[in-house]
Amino acid sequence: MLAFGASLLMGQGVHAAPIVMDLVAAESWVQIGAGSEVSLELPSPFGTRVLAVESQVDGSATAGLRTNLEGTLLADIGGGQIQVLPQLSLISPVDSGLWLPGVPGDTGTPVSADLAIAFSDSELGIDGSAAFRESIFNLMFPATTLVDQGGGVQSFAPTFVNYQFATGLLDYDLGLEGASGRTALDTLLPVSQHGVVGTYEDLGGGVMRVTLPFAFDLRVYDYDLRSPVPTTVTIGLSGQIVALVIPEPSTALLLGVGCAGLAISGRRRTRLAGKEAE
Image (cartoon, rainbow, N blue to C red; front, side):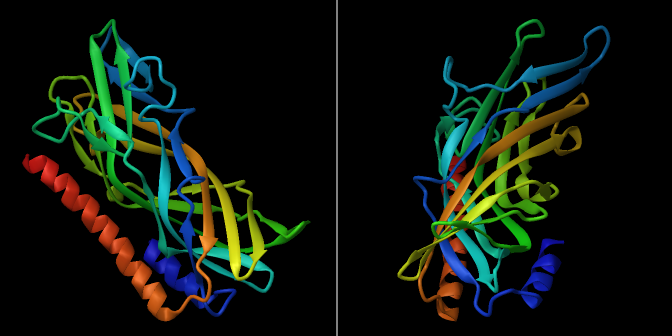
């Protein structure tokens, strides 16, 4: 679906040479926040239980719930418009620490993860957790008009922004008997966001900056999980992407960044595979 959209967008590009931009990791971040919950439809007399998502560290509002982002954007800028193409727009959360659950077969040992959550129900004795590992998502939006805001700043408001995980794993332990395992994030459907307003700045000397806030809900259902009861895990992801242009891009550079993106994915998978083998 996204591959078809990418071909269509490339054919209708607003600029002859899309520009590869590097994310500024210190200013780019993602967090799990509002709207995050785990809903379990339990047999009578319990009914539906909605468990709030929290940090695995008692009293912390950010531990495991927030991390920085690294990666690249492929931006097509020109003719008073901007669009972002999905091919090299690869966004990767940075490992935030050691979190539960561990990998399948050893869920009790914390392992490096990008993001992690905890949820519980003391009455039912549920003590669950989930962790995002090796995750990379891409994004795209169609050609959008740039509006001058003065001072070298232009704003843009795409009709939509699409997000989809290109790779990654969700390890989970729902706190119910037999309800633990792993789900591949790239099997989940793309998510669209509306009402986004970003900024584009020409900083001179061939340096350009794009800032894009984002917020979307990721939902995982019982058919994606080993759950004995109907389950919906909702993860509210929000944050911002700040990217700087690489001056004078070339075809070789585009290919080089593409290979670099694949290398990042390969290294992350290799690292996790090594942990599973320990």
